[in-house]
Length: 64
Image (cartoon, rainbow, N blue to C red; front, side):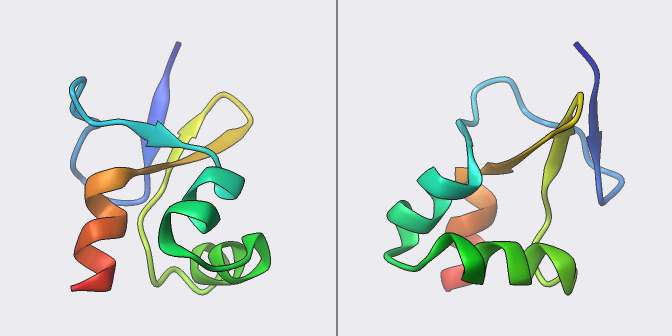
């Protein structure tokens, strides 16, 4: 399984990957808002095949 990032860093194996729906629930927002953040490249994401995943640490850093 190959993961691609929007930044130079690689996915750390200990970090939890969340779906867009899970990320929205985690932040208390809608899936649409999370997708907008991804589209506007305001938040980093990981591509696992054709799927988009978000690291929990990335979400925590976005909130801070």
